[in-house]
Amino acid sequence: MVTLTDQLGREITLSNQPKRIVSLVPSQTELLYYLGLDSAICGITKFCIHPTQKTLNTVKIGGTKQLNIPLIKSLGPDLIIANKEENDRLQLEELMSGYPTYVSDPYNLTTALQMINDVGVLTGREGPARRLYDAIMTAFNELHLPTQSLRVAYFIWRKPYMVAGKLTFIDDMLQRCGFTNAFEQARYPQISVNDLVAANPEVVLLSSEPYPFKQKHVNELQALLPNALIKLVDGEMFSWYGSRMLYAPGYFMGLINSIKQL
Image (cartoon, rainbow, N blue to C red; front, side, top):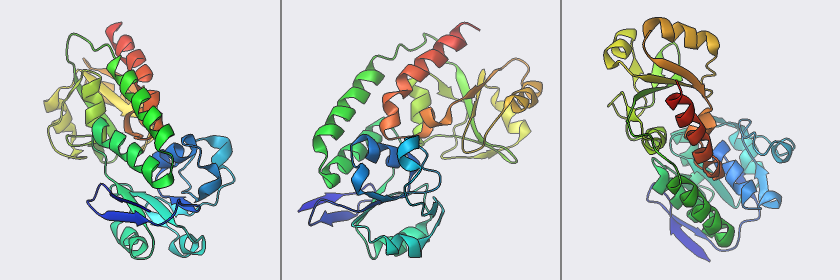
């Protein structure tokens, strides 16, 4: 029997190692596969795309915020892995009432690593989870930060413009790159053109997700901020808080170096 507390402060108890796991979060699905739980994963969302060959044939249970609850119930899960921010609260409450459900809420590297350890304990994969934890810590500790902290705006949406603010996992990743967030508001504030011009960021990062920014959007924002450096970036590296964190520091180092050269 295993008992632990999830990141909402809820106690989760499993009498046996789970054999039927449903994952409601793409980055945590990737983590489950990384930990070698392929045979136990019985349902994932349509946005769970990594690892490609393994997720293709797994049952899809809807989108992260539009779950097919009857289908999930028909799978008979003995563990559901969810997230406070990415999943709908009412749907989560329905699932939590009937199934052991671990809900994550990572807002920085420390809490993301705690989630990895928790999932390892719940699934009987403590060893691989701990090795992943250590490898991620080592990779982040080897990041070489720029001597000057640039003011950065990180865009996640268009029409309306939305950015990643404070108290978010993305903000913690920006800080670990040596950047300063140009926006002090918490979570994901909606901003106007006037707000953006007033913030006067030196660098603007346009994420590949959840909104798929393209070169035409770089041009659009360059007209508003002629003196800023505007770059398209891989949103998975900044916002996926599972095993993908192992590769994020290398990506960040390349980004930092490309900014230094411009």
